[in-house]
Image (tube, rainbow, N blue to C red; front, side):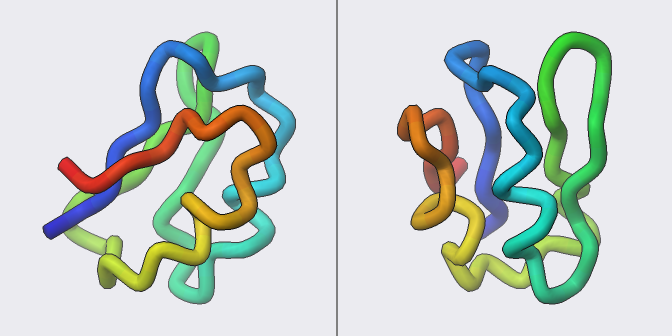
Length: 56
């Protein structure tokens, strides 16, 4: 199951740097996770300083 980024995202980019498959990119106002690329490893959730990332 893919992870998603909530509106609590502060666009710091730490999640994108931690993603081993490059599934995270800057979107409109927050970062977004491509569900087709996400391997559900959870690296992004662990790197988010505001807890904006959770399993879908």
